Image (cartoon, rainbow, N blue to C red):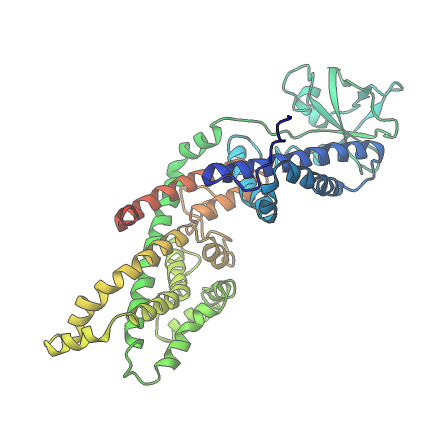
Length: 471
């Protein structure tokens, strides 16, 4: 008798290994579909140069639709995971891929000058020989040697890439170099018959530079990294402390049931939190204008001179902290009121009978009982403000010096007085090295990640989170 055919497993493997096994199968299926889409789109581009680029997505989706039944036949239990497949795709596309690209770029020289794209600013006229193998450049820009103009890795330029254009410069064509001699470039393969070469340019390649970006950051640490890091810590700490104190005081006052009109006060004090920060921050930027802002005009009525809120480095930092206090105290106030409602009123009645004053009740009952509720709020508030990009950028972008606040003597131009680590990285990415320096910004992002991780571990250790988790 023949043995019965093996039965396919209908239930998924259990435990963490089963989850990893399922994710691995889905990733292999997705990678296979991506490979098929890439190959088919490349073939289509060869046969029909005018084909739209989004065809690669069409091919990928088609390949996935064909692969899913096949994989489900081999692994019947994987069908349950198909519902999670879109979420995994979005996770890979919008979380894993950006993180991987950030780590990759941190060890390259990727920037506006080294983007991997053709250098359109230095296109120069060129002619093509009859055999379509030799490109001649009559005049090289700035009188440079041809190898220098092409940014070749070696003097012979063998294996480097040049970019050819037609008269309209509509479709760039990349070609490998076999050799150069004088002003003539010999191509490895003949140029396409459909291309009438009229111009040529170089390819602004980016390449790995190892730890060069990190060495540059730490070599200039005294002029950017450490001042910005110290201000980031100070800004996050002061914001959390001031917001917590303001919210605690107002919450205790407004929780008093004998206070008339307390709901009206709560509503009015809640409004700064209800208005979007995008609007509030820019509104405060206008209110703090040194010449025309209503804040300085009001101070002038009291005989106080105009304060350079967003022009002076110190006052700019004060302005950022005050505006962030305006935006943040309603949250702390609401959290305080919510936490106070959980405290048993019998404790206060017993304390009153024992002769405890109102202040003694607050210090011996209210504050100790609020500690458990406020600890995670304060920790999360510190982590949020450590990377609070919005308030710094939106408030200071209206200042005469632009985003980041006024410059500080001795600091890099990309690190203004109010810049925290995150906004400094943003300025480095979009306001340096010809407008873009993604490699250096990626290195800054990695440093921010490790600093944030270290601070979070210290906060959790101080708050006893790890000990609580072991219980």
